Image (cartoon, one colour):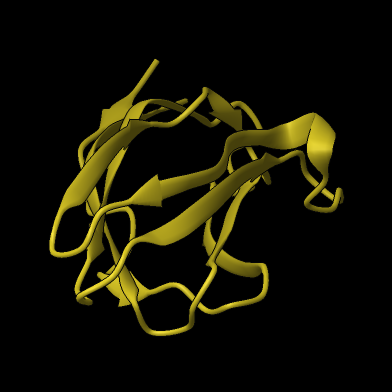
Length: 113
């Protein structure tokens, strides 16, 4: 079993519609993202809600894979969120109640195979 320490994704901003943030590499097929953590930062003067999904390979963002359901982040504040374990091909999707208001950055995570 190999363990890789790598940057999961570059920081970015959430859109106001569900969009892909990161996909766990499909090769090797035994890949598993563990101990993932992201920071959501509200860069505005008002509270903004953020929503995140851990979508199974070939799936779609839905209530069954939502792990952060419209949580309000206060103005000029942040929220650290632990990601569920994600397998090869699984994807992280998310959105905010207002576009370009919530920044997302990878804080931690181990990719095992």
